[in-house]
Length: 123
Image (cartoon, rainbow, N blue to C red; front, side, top):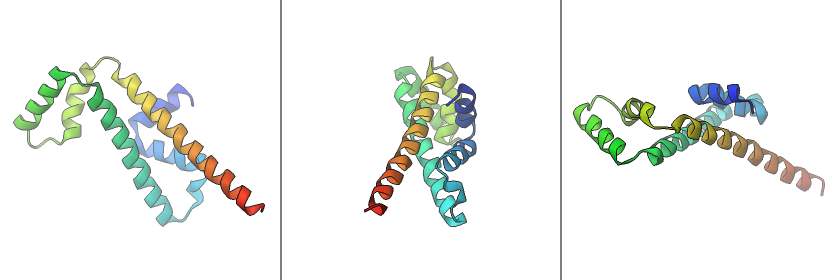
């Protein structure tokens, strides 16, 4: 996947979901199925990115995160993290790698399922 596609996916969850659905040909599924898949893909992406961000924070950033959360209860964790993350060296690259890895995993999973179904149908 090109760097431009990865960056656009990282900055827009809907783009990522659409690209996965199109690449797996699931964009032709029923609206209910598309909604469910979109929700699951979005949640998986969110979990991956959040885990990458949190794993990249040092003690200083974790303390700052706690302080922000205490001092600004109107912010959710994602908003607070977005304040801190620009100071974490190499974080964008790690997030882009996670996004790309997830994309490839989802595509590979669908290919494996298709291959297995094809084998079963040919029996």
